[in-house]
Length: 204
Image 1 (cartoon, rainbow, N blue to C red):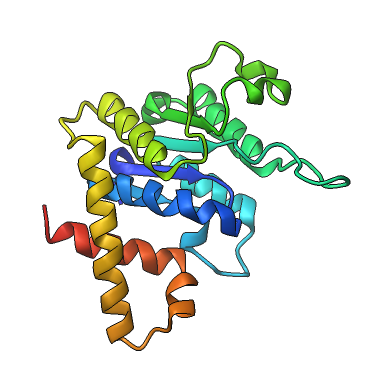
Image 2 (spheres, helix red, strand yellow):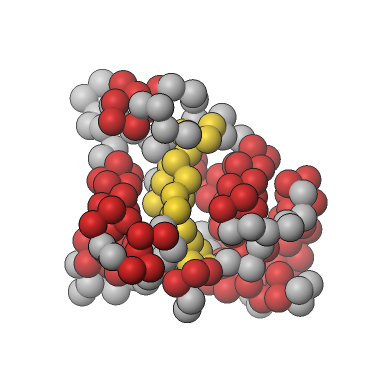
């Protein structure tokens, strides 16, 4: 996989975020880039931090979603994995030489300015807000990649409509392969990305 076409995705993996993760991954793939995400490999013998570092160093681009920083219930801890991985990515960009100095990142949040309470070092940085809206995350990711990679990309509405078409086609194909509705919902991320790449590849 090419460093210049890889996009490291640092985001929550909870069930609620799946509504954002799927269109996020699809947008990257539809624009002919390759998402790199921890869930692409499920080897229990691989140390997670080693895997994260390898994904970051193999990717020119990165998307960091900090929308789960805040604890939702009394006694619940903050989610620190996402800001930690953002720090590793920024450190890679600043302290390594050569191609790593060209790295670019997009930081996402659910609400404007909320991140500053937890990460004041990001004050005055350009943060994109998705409002927990799948359509908005397609727009933000599409616009960022188009700008940073110098693309003449299809419009956000076009990408969203393609994503909806993919969902319908992929559901029908999985059902033909013997998947139940529950199986479809629990399709591993690596397999989902492969389905997206095959579907988009027929349209390039």
